[in-house]
Each structure stands twice: as structure tokens, then as C-alpha cells.
Amino acid sequence: MTTADRRSRSVPLLIGVAVAVIAADQLAKTWAIDRLSRGDIDLIFDWRLHLVRNPAAAFSLGEGMGPLIGVLAISVVVALVVMSRDYVGWVPTVLVGMIVGGALGNIVDRALRSSDGFFGGEVIDFVDVRFWPVFNVADSAVVLGVMGLAIYSVFFAPEPADEAEAPAATNDPLAHQPPDSEPAEPTGSEAGDDVRP
Image (cartoon, rainbow, N blue to C red; front, side, top):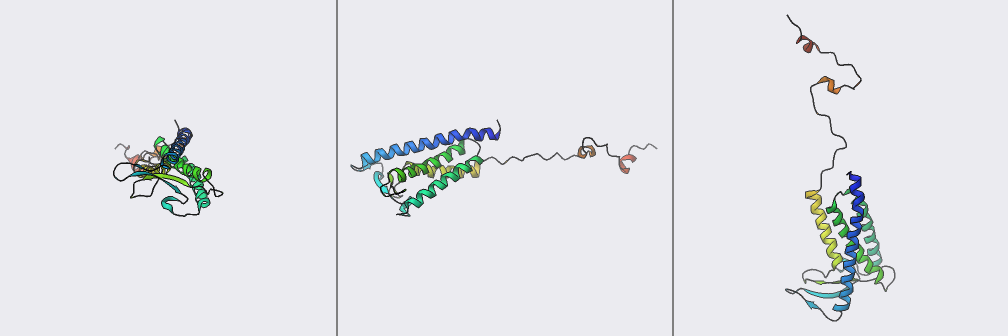
């Protein structure tokens, strides 16, 4: 199978992973709105499920800039899809799909949960570990995808193949001549080797 074939087959996998992440994220957010509106759920340690409606970007930065954040997120998604053509194999494809799905999951919130115009919706966050800003399934997919892709690129990405292998070094003078050319005349030293006294 050629590299082009593997790349063409990776597109359905990337789309499938992205759709799965979006579906899981939206289902989890729908459940969180219904259940956590009635109160928090305590987990282990001091972790909890706590409903937060975030109009800003990650870590509550950029509040009031929902449209700009949405446009930037779409631009990042497009760039990732274009860059994914350089990756060969299912591992980087899955990781890119996670990032794309996570980014689109939060874009869906801004677009469909909007009560304040274009991309003015709030992102639903509900996982609260206290020492980190409250996050959601989409955020987790983005972070894990980015970390995994960085590790893969540094330690496991295959070396780019040379377009053509260099010919092996040889001392044979005929090896460096075009196929239709006449054999090279022996040099003086080479001719002398055949002289008999």
C-alpha cells in the first residue's frame, strides 16, 4: 500500500474519531445541565462535578470575546485538518481527530447555546478537580490529543523517506558510465598490470 493510499484511508478514521468526541461531549454536557442544575456530585478526594457556564476561552480568559474565539477555533480546526495530510498511520490520525472533535465540541456550544448573537453561547464545563479550571470532555480530548501528538512527533514519527536512494559507492569504472557508452580505456597503471615481460 502506498503512502497516498494510507493517507486517503486515514480521512474516514479522523472524521469518525472527531464525530465520536463531539457526540460524547454533547451527551455529557446535556446530562450535566439536567443533573448538576440540582446540585453538585462529590467524587473522590475533594473532586466534584460542578456545573459552570463559561462565556470565555480556556481558564476564563477573553470574556466577552466569544465570536473571536469561535472564529479562531474554526481556523485552528481547518489548519489541523490540512496538516493531518502529512501524517501517516492510525495513531496520529486518532490524535488529530481528538483535537478536532474537542475543538468542534466547544464550537457547538458557542453556536447552539447562544443567546447573545453570533458565537455568543456559553461553553458547559462540569469537571472540577479544584487545582485546575473546571473543564469538560471536549477540553480533555484536546489536551490529551495535543500531548499525544507531541510525544508521537518527537519519539515515534517515522523518518521521511528519500525520494531516490544514492547509488552504492564502487571502484568499478563501468558503474559510473551511461548504459550506451563505450567501456573506458584502461589507464596506464591498469594497462601495465597486464603486460608480460
